Each structure stands twice: as C-alpha cells, then as structure tokens.
Length: 173
Image (cartoon, rainbow, N blue to C red; front, side):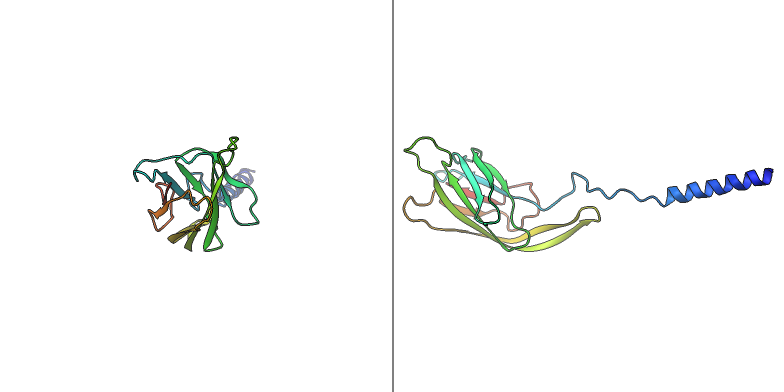
C-alpha cells in the first residue's frame, strides 16, 4: 500500500512538472515595443526660419481614394504625426489651411505634398512581427496656380524614418 501511494505521488508530481514546464509564455506585443513609425512634421515660420508656427485650422487628408477620413482635422499645433503607406513607396497628402473657417473672407488653401521612400522590414519579435522602416525620404510639393502655395518650402531633416523621437520633416509657411 505504501508503495502504491509513493508511486501515485511520484506519478502526480511528474505530471505536474511536465504540465508546468510545457507552458509557453504569452505572445503579447508589449506596449513600448517599437512599431512602424509615423512621419513627424514640424511647421516653421517662413519669415525667420527658426520659430515653430502653427498653421491655422489645418486639415491633413490622404489623396488615396481608399482612405476617406481625414488624418487630422482643423487642428492648430506646430507638430503633427501622420502615417506613410507600408506597401507602396509613395504617399500623397493634401494639407489644407483655414479648413473650417466660418469667415467668408478667409478661403481654404490646399497644397498637395507627396513623400517618396524605400521600404525595409525589420523583425521585432514573434508576438509583434515586423515593422516597416522608411529610407531615403524625399518630398515633392505640387505648385499651384490661383491662390498659390501656402507651403513655401519643405526640408527633410532625417532621411530615415525609424522612430518618432524627432521631426523628420520641416514645413515652412
């Protein structure tokens, strides 16, 4: 009887040890894990070239017909973060100032800016998968007739978009 109890205890212990050792940790992507970064844009006063200046009632919208919502709508701040496409090497946006002005004398002005880049993928982990890094960032501002461009210049500050720690692009207006 003692031998049977000992064997049962030993078998139960082995089963429990096997169950505990075969558990895997949860594959959860931690909140602070780097993911595909957004493009950080700072707006600069064109008159002095150094002062951060918020555009009035800025709306940012993708020109992609599959994306109908605005990324930003009627904001007034000197820094924004917008997503670039992860499957194509170009993303085009419409930047509109005075987007929601109720004054009939103030007319909305839209400038079209496209960002070109090469895409590389970086493995993060099993839980998080891959993230996209954007390399050799360039830009194109479409020149307008009529009202003219409210954006006077665009300068790339970082050719590689791999984090959201600092501005990648300065827009002068």
